[in-house]
Amino acid sequence: MSQNEMIILTDVVLITAVVQRGLADMVVQVAQDAGAQGATIFHAHGTGVRQKRLGLLGLTINAEKEVVYIVVPSDQADAIFERIFVAAKIDTPGMGILWMTPLEKMATYVPYEVAARFGLHVERRR
Image 1 (tube, rainbow, N blue to C red):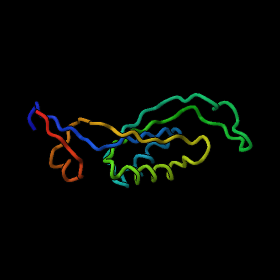
Image 2 (cartoon, rainbow, N blue to C red):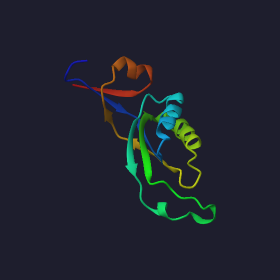
Image 3 (cartoon, rainbow, N blue to C red):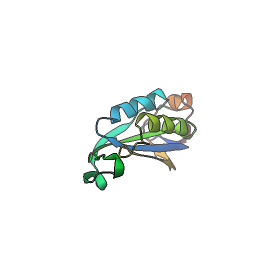
Image 4 (cartoon, rainbow, N blue to C red):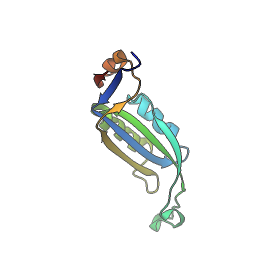
C-alpha cells in the first residue's frame, strides 16, 4: 500500500455497548467469537438513578462503566449484537445499554487482501 493510498470501508456498523465495569473483556470475547475482528474499550462514569434503588428489585446501579466500540460488517452486525445482548445480560435492569449505528464510511489501515477475505466492501482512493 502506498503512503497516499486510503482504503475506505463502507457497509459497516458501529456497535456500542455500555456495560458494568469488569464486563468489557467478556463482551469483546463474545463479539470476537461471533466474528468481530477487535474492539476499543474505555472507562466511563454514569449518571442517573444509580444512587436510588430501582423499584421492587432493590437494585443499586454502579456508576463505573466500560464502553466498548466494535466496528463490524453490516451483514454480521445483528448476530454479534444479539450475542452481546445475551452475554452482557442487557435485559437485566442496570446492566447496561447496547446500540448500533450505521457508518457511512471508515478509514484505517487494512491490507486490501484482508478486507477482501473478510468480505468488507472497500473503495480504493489515491
